[in-house]
Length: 102
Image (cartoon, rainbow, N blue to C red; front, side):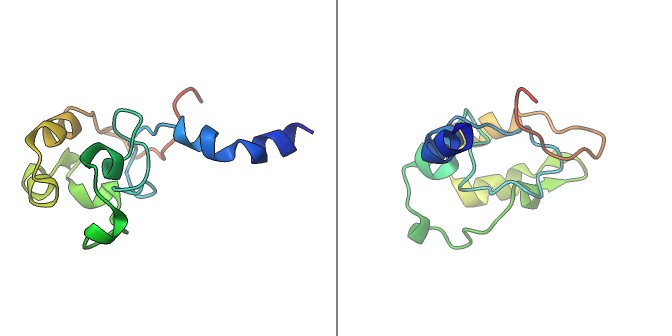
């Protein structure tokens, strides 16, 4: 019964999930709720078909455990969003992602 209800509400549950960055290799840059509990498509009010590379991962924007601000600016062209991303801490140790609250 519980599992059936989880499946019934899975999209609503998914919308409430947020990520911690970890190494960023398992987080979709555009589609996952990793910034302000939202995804970048919603924040920027754009559609999948407007994106050149919709399969990008958050890790594609991290170099030497730091955000690549230049690359973020090239892809996003939104200073406010880029500043919010740069303000997200990246762990110095190689940890896997986990859901907030785990």
